[in-house]
Amino acid sequence: MSHKFSRRRLLGAGAAAAVAGSAWWLTDRGLLGQGEPGRLLSSQVPAPRPFQTLLPIPAMLTPTRTDETTDYYEITQRPAMLDILPGLPTPAWTYHGSFPGPTIRSRSGRRTVVRHRNELPQPVVVHLHGGHTPADSDGYPADLIMPVAGAAASPRFSPHGHGHGATADGQRDYVYPMRQRAATLWYHDHRHGYTGLAVWQGLAGFHLVHDAEEDALPLPRGERDIPLMITDRSFAADGSFRYPLTDPRLGVPGVTDAYMNGVLGDTILVNGAPWPLLNVDRARYRLRLLNASNTRRYRIELDPQPPGGDALIQIGSDGGLLERPITHDTLEIAPAERFDIVVDFSRYRPGTQVRLVNHLGSGPTAHVMRFDVSGATVHDDTAVPERLSHIIPLDAAAAAVTRTFHFQLRSGDWTINGHPYQPGRPLARPRLGATERWRLISDFHHPVHVHLDPFQVISRNNGAPSRYDHGWKDTVDLRPSEAVEIAVRFTDYTGTFMLHCHNLEHEDMAMMADFTTTPR
Image (tube, rainbow, N blue to C red; front, side, top):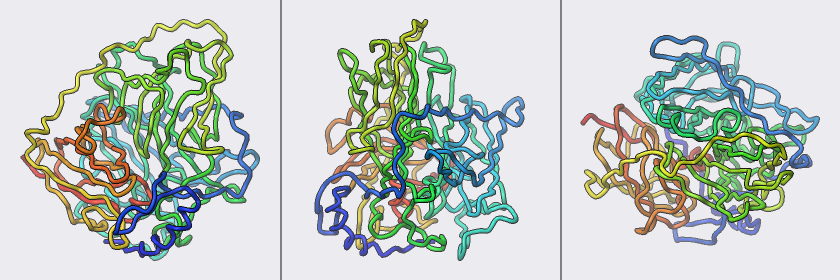
């Protein structure tokens, strides 16, 4: 199935968006202007005061049962009312009644099975982002879970097959072997044409993987190991999430013309709370940063900086621990990227109020959250070792194949290699175990996500990778008119997987492609 959109309408909307200063636009002839992707969608209610709500920590999901090899979980996807705005409940689509959904913790090498039951009025798909997962549990966008009996499905919706065989009635078991290292993963909806809407409505949660290598390090843990899901949202006058659908009846996917380049909210949420506050000890904290926004990029920094700077000590990226820590004053985070950092709040004087700011935002979106540093004396036996892990570089020079993928607006469509998405048409057939060199070329900001296995960034515009490209990645931020080379090696599982832009409006409007892994 291929959704065809009239993205020539997008070009007509470009001038208005450029005037708004929130996007730059392209035609087939080239660049018209530059800036951050997306267009701001204003809320119809006043913004809540920042730093009034304590940071929520997502609940940990308990297995329904365990055996010698496997932990079993159950999640019900259902509507719920959320308390985000003061005195104005927000209806949402949720995992188990909360946003973010409950956090799942897995052990490397121990199988995890998650049964998802769909009590929403729409079909859903679940993708474990960053998971090394067999094809039939990867969340291919047409592998639908239809609503349980009694819940109305989308009007004019009809499922399409794709080779996984996969429409399920009411529920599906996702099987995750967890043959991967410790990492900060997340799960979210991945339905073809409706991912942006579903995530905006609340379908996202953390899935953390642990292993013996990470356990042996003296890193912060327990209450000082905190996942932070950063998102932006806009609200309608009744408190509901505001989103610019082309068809509110959901018979036709996509957003209205002006927002085809991405939707930016005017309210920053962290773990579902607007501009929250966290009281911290004068000690080291591990912060697992996830940009779960549809489109918005962040350039974050602590304000004030601690004496001497280097406030953000990066210890991990999408695919787990770095080989050595990297210090930053600022971090740029594109949609779907994760950065595990350690912040030592003992470097601040007691009583200091430390804001996490966003230099790519303006007005309210220039702020993310605040940390209030306690004056109490606490014991802290944690440290950040000079060596965290051992990462074997993939040998790109000996790559079996070099492939090129162009992410571009072409003939009015968001495309990869000139084609809007069509399920069942793979653009590559890599062999398991073979290292390949993939060249990703953009016309625009495109955070590119590759399913199944992480990769290593080997160059940007034939130069060195950026300071944010180190370690194992599964999402890389392509900047305008940029070429990024990655080395990738797929292992264990044959079948059909995805690469796509993780600007969710671009993804929904066909900037996806299949690739099929084949035996050695």
